[in-house]
Image 1 (cartoon, rainbow, N blue to C red):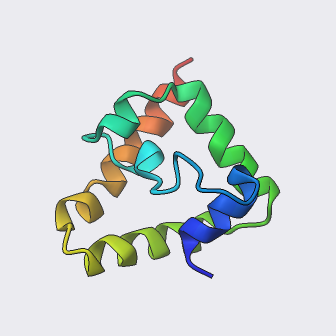
Image 2: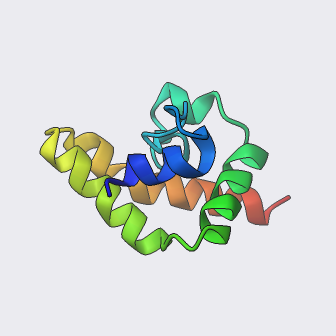
Length: 92
């Protein structure tokens, strides 16, 4: 199952979920990331973990998806997004 389908199943209740691309979490240069609060980002990650989805595998699938889309800038931004998320979460 594609990572976006997994997220739709958890969050979308059978329909497309608005954060399904995960740029909300991993791409600090996107409008999705900018328009989502840190609290919501943390909530999303907690729900993903609670549903036994490996974050490591999810990130790899995310990167692979954007590699295939030839959006290498999105792939390269993952570490920046995670670093930003961690820093802001830990300094609260």
